Image (cartoon, rainbow, N blue to C red):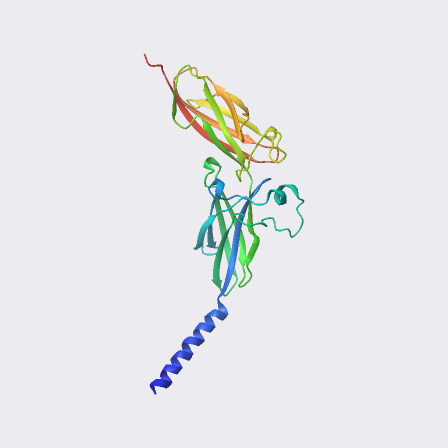
Length: 260
């Protein structure tokens, strides 16, 4: 009797395992992000956080980081885009991959937040997609395209102190969202295609508007400013290119009287 009972239990358990595996199917979701008019966004700009939620309940199902390289420059920037082309082709192109065990179609709300090194230019983008059992979303995956520029204030650093009468360097590093290089006479991201400006405020009033020129160093744009009085100043850097990308960087500084 004990033998028959054990056999029956084993059959029941085995049947349960096969029933679960027959219904719940491992299904992959690949998520990537592409900079508008540039390359894939990944590790060099801090990556992007991805949160996957159930569309109907808002329950978080998974989260992770898009990390990796910016992709194949020739494929992304020099060759015509054709229907069905996998633009992320190549080893190490940035992505994050999730796997869900599902037995029914699952409607997802996918949020992308970043680039994490973007400071004032961190985006939050949202897409919706169905995920069908056994139908992996692979290749370019669920592809986000982020429009904008990264603008990193270089000089002055936030809350930096200067002596009254000093001429301050005013500079910023400006790149596409992927962190790709901007250079003079560069066919991909030409510095001449970028307009960078610094607006200087004191006491909530704009007191100067400075055009920043390419400084001869990759992605660097600069000017200078001589404060006429002490106190706290705010600097707002703006940048735009000829392809609808725009970005902002914010800094500030303090001017003090010379020591006697």
